[in-house]
Image (tube, rainbow, N blue to C red; front, top):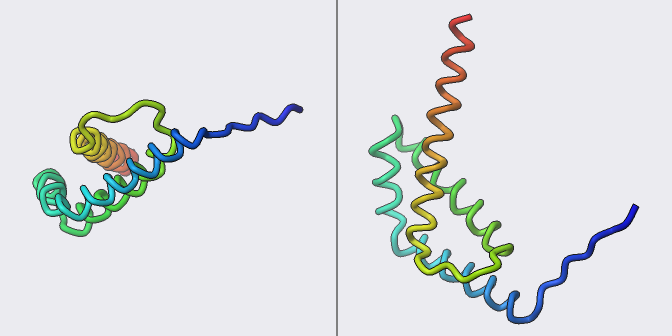
Length: 101
């Protein structure tokens, strides 16, 4: 079995670090905006906070593998937030359906 080693160039590594810093800054500056967006779409404050934390953890992890610059980081994160909300709806719907059986 061959092992595949993926190495990042210094430029790619710098881009990933810069992106991570931009994401962290976005979280600090726009946290309330993201939380308000989520809160309008879920039942509880706790669920909204869980979704926000989950999204930012996943986005930060994904930022290490980004190959091309992201032009609008806030839009990228909002898309991730929206997708995570949809996932939570689907999960609840599946749980509700399984309860009915």
